Length: 559
Image (cartoon, helix red, strand yellow):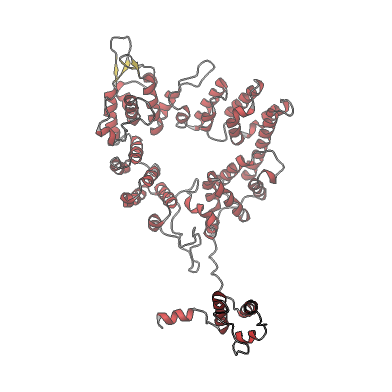
């Protein structure tokens, strides 16, 4: 059979009714004065219809003929071939949440209007999703469309939503383009997801978990043909499971990528970063994009054994040395670089400071921040605590703050808990703010969760909530009971001082999702003691209701 014969056989047969309808269309387009109507008494369907209309007014007759022909066409139409039924979603072995937890999710998705509660449901939904994912549950199927709709408008929910939705969520995303974000989001708390579903014993058909309205591509095809967000997601997943394969995939197209895309692809290399990535990052230091060079330098600075770290260490030794001089005791003599040479520029140090600082101070800070922290103990024999007590100076100019700030950046980059602990200093006490060099919240994030919470609790007890927002944000949620108790006590002091609740709105918003549920009685007592119909009474009442709601929500998921 020829190709033309195949095409003819696949097309529906053209009928006389179709031909007569085409004649009427032509008459309508050209006008009845140029294309007359079918004459009455004809033998075809159009002729039979023409006998039934008044031809006095040709335009009216045309419309009547069209109406009669339309009815005839519809009455004689045959049903077309039904669309192919998509293959069902792959089975999901996870247990479904309990009925109580499902009802709670429906309330959270419905918003405050769906429940007679003053609890902040918008803050509690992320916790429900995270807790359900961590416990290995799946949501009820009938709530998945609402959950996907909510995650479409709230990007912070997507990672947990994609992980919870599982195979059925990916199947639904293939039917509704509004949910295409499912295929572009790396699921929270899960390893890399294979690009090709595992072989099945089911009859051949479309992949059951196809995330898009096209066949599921393998990793190579997705990397070359996918949208940018899909490619970043694929590279991130691959780096988590096979860092070497992820690097090889990125290297295969690196020279053809746009500069702004190369920066984000480099960020994905943070997962599984090791010495195996050094040669690729060294080559990226010669990239024509300044942002790519800077990102590559930051990644290399987290590899203390790299050649980049060795170059920075050599510059740092030239810039800072331990000396005793004529003054009693030791101090650190600082000799900041006089110029930013070509080698420094290649290692990601810009000639001009983007922060407005003096150029020599900027170059000095970039060198120290990029050098491995281990070199200071090796070269001086002093511990971080001992080094931080020394004055750093260049003649009459004091460089101590600049040096400590650069050390803080290095501690964050290299995730060095010892240096972070030393830079933060002892837990604050009233009258002793502690040594908080650099950004305390970023240094806190380097420490273990329990130590973070203890240090922040001491800070809140000593200094209140005024400067605690970023510190509290660095602590794992829910907060430990001691930290939660310190925050509640600080709120009580703030209310007693006459401050308005909105002056602590950021911390109050955080307490709704982070306070330990055990503090609910203390918050309820504050609500009861507050003057009726005041802002603090409303604030404490809403917070207590949120804590009760959250406690019940977590109990349902645990049970």
